[in-house]
Image 1 (cartoon, rainbow, N blue to C red):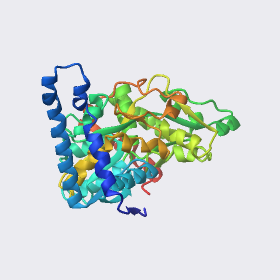
Image 2: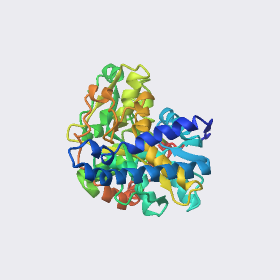
Image 3: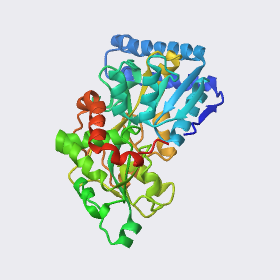
Length: 388
């Protein structure tokens, strides 16, 4: 695959200091003087906020001294580019970025083994992040802005990654093609095993896409280990293509090349709203589904550690995450001071209507589960697994 590295030009450094300084002081501690507390207690209430602001100022200066940041992004490229460009505008730090699937990033940093060519990872579901953390390839960092996360679910307990968005797993269908063939839409996971869908279903590659890794863990958690793997073997009989990227199926539903795509439903919204495909239907599986937490993290041993820490702080602010909906990515946001993309709820998505996902099991066993699924599939599926 031809890899694209995009460089963005240096921006408005002075404005960046002012903007980040304001963000750093918008904490509950900073608001304490407005509360009905005795005047003598106000200085004590202000002290933590002052310390936080001072710490953030020091981090900004250290990051500027490094002067550069390299980002590997597993979200959609439009969002990645916007986030990197805005970071550069805020802080005057030159940013290089490259869009890679989560599996590609995981493989890359495993090969580099502690001497990473990038500084931070941005976007993409957490299953590959957890594998990388378990291999000692991510750097723990206790982010100040993590106080805005709406729940502990949306961070690694040791600070190896932080959530920035949440996506719902489901099906996207081309309603025109299904009507033409006289086939009803699938309503649930086991419907996809019906022979009438043979050659109509697209899923992403278990080896390269975090979305597909989530599908494996979801089926095992939903049905049990052996039945979950057998489900994926049975599903394989109906799958036409395994795309390299998790959003690959969604990008081919509107054209009819893919009739039923398994993936994140916000990718389907992008095809409807931004690309004008009114023939795309979104389906939430009737017996329940799971969700991704899109994350960000620092690579251990990175060349620009202070710029990387500043990126994490930036990624946990509205300045960053609200750029998603402005650039065709309609995931639910997981920080309490950001505006949710209204369009997601207009399509009937509910961020709370999901199964309880066992992140610890996924963290411990994803690599093993992938090997087991690929062994169970054998060589029959090899020519359908795309890597470019």
